[in-house]
Length: 622
Image (cartoon, rainbow, N blue to C red; front, side, top):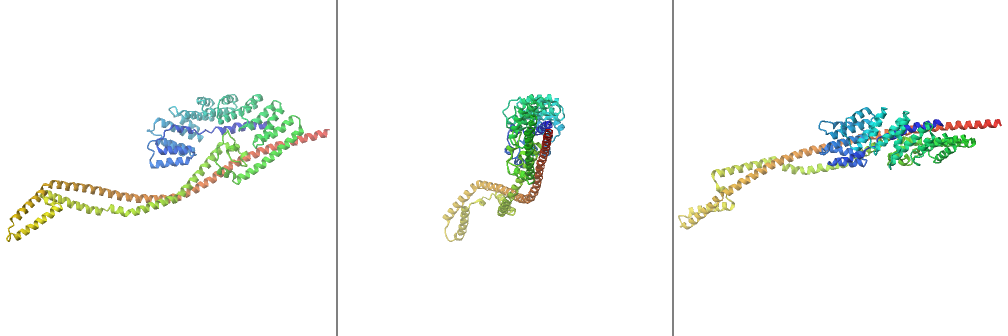
């Protein structure tokens, strides 16, 4: 059974490192930026609602419409971060690299170096990440500075430069969560390289932290478990029990702590005390490896107590449990093959499980859930699950866009009809032939005005009444000529002379005002013709542009329909591939579990056969 201990130690040191080394998203940093562009603020809102695709779309539309006037660099940084979080590090890198030029201010440049380093770090290009972080010339905001040192610490851990890693870890603010994760990673790495004392120092520092956060409590439990297992390896069971006894009673590490505590008491030659922990673990009736190993440990304890009948009974019970577990595993495998796991992931709103909660608390009830704790908590599966979720989001968005196309086509048809209805009016308004005729009439009027001025022809400016009077006076003059030999018209002619003089005086004295008014009207007419010509040209140009826009919009709609159809098919294919990958990762985990249970079953069968053989020899001797 000591071999099982070594398995536990190796499993804890490696799997916990995989689960806990993944950086936590530092979303709080975005709150440090002021919002002055609407699109930038809207994108941030969608990001905080965990709608990354809508956030990316908002920024993409804003860039296309050139509405990011005040915060183009902030928007680019945000877009680069969104692509990074969306699992597109190459696209993120391209966006961020474009920001680096001579016009970029120092603060923005440092943020770019930081985000590029994050990209390289996540791509496991640690050397490039280290070089990029070294280019940062100023102190970053507190949260970014802590994450920077955390990444550098892990880079040095990867290079087994533990002194430099310790220096970086020490630079992280103690109250930062990055400090806790860095201490854990360094402690685990040192332990894995057999530097147990140095690793113990960092893990002890971690568990001494005062915190109210559930996540850090669980991280401390992980450290206590590792410290307890290390103490067992060093044959220090008392020290092991000290660490293991402080692990939370119902947490992610409880079962392994109960199993390890039992082995610590067993090393202290106290199998009865060990039985207390293993029986407690067995009563939990869970399906993890620690619980299954407890059944063997219980039988082994009864052997140590020289109670062979009870040992045989528990070995047989263990075999029944192992057979039941293998049957359940077979059912779980079959359910995964039948796409039940994928359907569960698709239909439910699944939260990312952390070390502070079990997968059962993060997923709906499902037959394979008890066997998939570790695979669901692994970084690889979480990335696969994230990609799956985002593909579904993209696919749903494409379906939504596709369903909106008929609406857009109807809107286009309405705009075309409206334009056609107004086209005749626009044509009349912008008729240059009519404007040309009006221009000719204006030119005739201008010629008339010049002639009046040159000839001082004030009669040409007489009004209708005055023209009527002048015509009447001309008629009277003709009458006088006919009657002057027959009658004495002296008095009438005198009146005629007075009336003619008065009318001529009125017209001549009012001539300047009338001529100025005529000139003013001519100027207004010139302005109106100029504006009409300009408006007509503008209307014609607008009409042409509108025709082009409507045709372009029509082509875009018709083209987008087929493009969206193609993208939807591609997304469906990618979703299917991602579902296969999810099943493959789950099936691999179940296969390892089956191998583990089969090994336990073989060990139980061997021990049971050995005990029966011993009892048989004892009876023969008697």
